[in-house]
Image 1 (cartoon, helix red, strand yellow):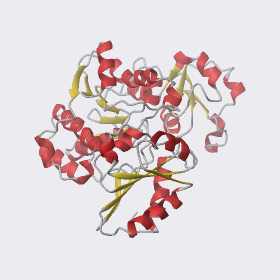
Image 2 (image 1 turned 60 degrees about the vertical axis):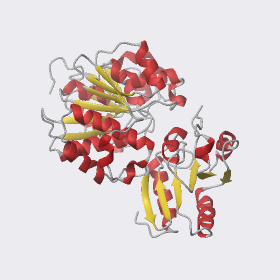
Image 3 (image 1 turned 90 degrees about the vertical axis):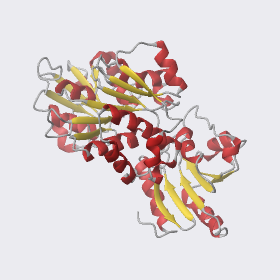
Image 4 (image 1 turned 180 degrees about the vertical axis):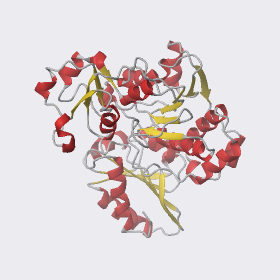
Length: 432
């Protein structure tokens, strides 16, 4: 544990955002510094009421550090003016973790595939008797882990929001799986989004390692423009090598998940993991909830719940490998998002759009695909199952991959995925 000159010890600290990461940060620092709390929703976590400060009180306190949760948008929150005046004081829980621990970390970012890649890598380390901790966007909040030793390895899934706000965090192993236009509503421009992702590489020192997708134009352009101290490995994801022949898990039939495995094999080699054991870990991997998750697979019907999909790119990775598929999408379309699959691939599936923003999706897809629109998900599935029942001889696939944010009707993608599963139960004997 790092103690000498720690920038978070014995300081006056404001923690902004009282979700899981904010509360874990408070619990970690409360006996180490003078900590105050704030959340835009003043009714949350009332058991911390004594430590919660009001907006007018915050202006009077000279904070040394401000730790904000990734969900806070500096440009659109109750303390926006205050934060903009104090930008140099803003940090994240990743910064706190780095300031206290010298442990090796593998930090994974990218537009798509972060959670799956992080989980498989974590599972592989655990299966090979390494003390791995899965933290960040997936797993436990960064600062909630206990009993950390020198041998503990952190596998971190990091979003562009976390990286954008972090100031001192760095990782020995950095991974950028891919970059497509995303979160433009928050980052304002694609350039800002790319810069946030590349802070992960920019912060690395000599003796560090970075892994990026070789065939990604946005990544390649950024690498050419800047110099980095880490050794950079460009991972070729298009030509699969002999290692993939041993992978029998059908979860990895999609192009996106094959790309994730390309990174896993490359990093595993550097970590000196046993390949036979690694293949065993991969073959028993059951996938993550609501991420290309096969929830029903019998006779002539397979149902895939990919509620995590919030962009066309994430849905396309699977669509190009499907035949006789009913693609269900809906939600809030991403600003500037484009559908890029070829006309030949488009013949393999039908498109069913649901929800309030169905006309926005329709305007993007109507000249490329055969599209039907519906008011809600229940209405959509009723029609799809009616069509399937009339064509029982075919092997059909229902692919729920919304390609849009969930906040039109749901709390998050998990809430949306769970709702889909509940409706499916009415039509099948699937075990959810």
